[in-house]
Structures are given as C-alpha cells and as structure tokens.
Image (cartoon, rainbow, N blue to C red; front, side):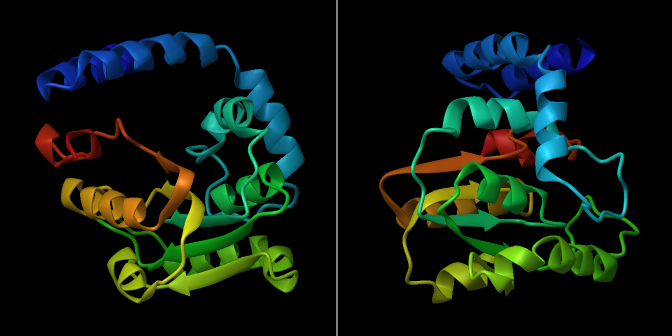
Length: 207
C-alpha cells in the first residue's frame, strides 16, 4: 500500500493527467492479488533461466497483466529496447508464438546499475535466448537505441520500451518507436512509475 500511495503522490506532483492516475489505481487493485497467476506463468516460461540475482522479479511481476490483455493478439514482428538477461524476450516469445523478436541493448547499463557485471548479464542473455536465435526467431543488436533507430528501416507490430530510464532518453525512444510502429501496432513502456532520480521531473512519467 505504501508503494501505491507514493506513486499516486508523485504522479500528482508532476501534474499527471487525472485519467492516467485513475487507470493506475483501478488496475493496481484488480491485479494486486494475482501473484499466484504470475508465479504459474513464471514457472512455465523460465525453466533453467540463468540470472545474476534470482530475487530480481521486475518483469515477472507483470506477467499476468500482460498475458490477460495481450494473449489473443497476433504479432509478427516485435522490437524490445532493453533486454538485460532476456526475461521479456522469452515471455513475448511464449505469448506471441509466431513473432520474430529484435532485441536492442548496450549491455553496459545506465545510471541505476551500480557494480553490475554486465559481461555476465550479457552471457546470461545469450544462453537464455539461444534456442530462439538458433530457430531464427530472435536477433540481437548490441548498441544504443539511438544508433539502432538511425540504421533501422523495419516496422514493427509491437514495440516494448525498457531501456535507459532517464526522461530524455525515454522520450527519444518513444518518439523513435512511434515512427516505426505499424498501423494498429502496440507501443508498451515499462517502469512508467520508476522514481530513481530525486528530481521527479527526470523520471519516465514526466516524459
């Protein structure tokens, strides 16, 4: 409950539109007691998953919400900005059986990543996604999202933005993604309410 109240307060402090706050509260209470469903999905998707810290469950906390809202959507080409150890890529492959996934990450971290072994994190990504790459269902691009978009000519049905979380970079990623989204495509941003920077206006929700 403390997290809910903190998020609501911070959203008010950065003058967030009221309909966004309302939808956040509504969805929070609907999915708050869905931890069992998330756990069941996690056990199905992440067999033998390699990670530097098994306690880090950032993406897996949203599994049921994503499954419930996206399971019947047809996606052929998917782009994700920010891949880390491959949790999101594996889930999207599970959810969208026919999708080809493009993963973009520097594997060097950003402001919030202190003392992280990104050589090992990238190695874990490679091992976790090996079967997808072998079956030509996944491409890996080791670069910044800015460089990727400068050289990319493809369009995507679904784009997931979860890279550098600083406000300016999030905004660039969203603007660049929007330009490369197919008609009727989906653009999803993770960590919207991520409050790493003390100045609230430097966080994603201010983008």
